[in-house]
Length: 124
Image (tube, rainbow, N blue to C red; front, side, top):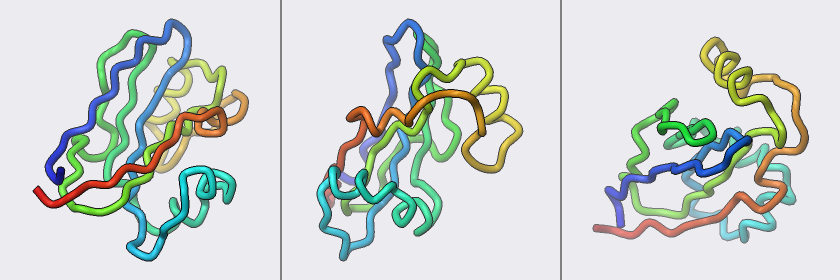
């Protein structure tokens, strides 16, 4: 329901994770697989994310954008775009001085490996 607060609990011992929530356009009825296959550029270029929450391995949640509350009804894309194998400390340091996603070493983003979903937020 609208007003729900998302939270990230990273139980990994090695990987940094994030939860990026982006409200999709009303006309966007694609599945999560179709959105991921498109590369996400169109969704991410449509406007700023509603929330970006990060957590280092075993660490506390860091709210980088918003507080995790999904206040508006609609469809939301949830993804983790952290590069696989990225050094958590290096990523967080780079994120602190970046206006966008940090450019750090690592493999494909986690969403390529299934860390993505679409949820429906309803009226409260």
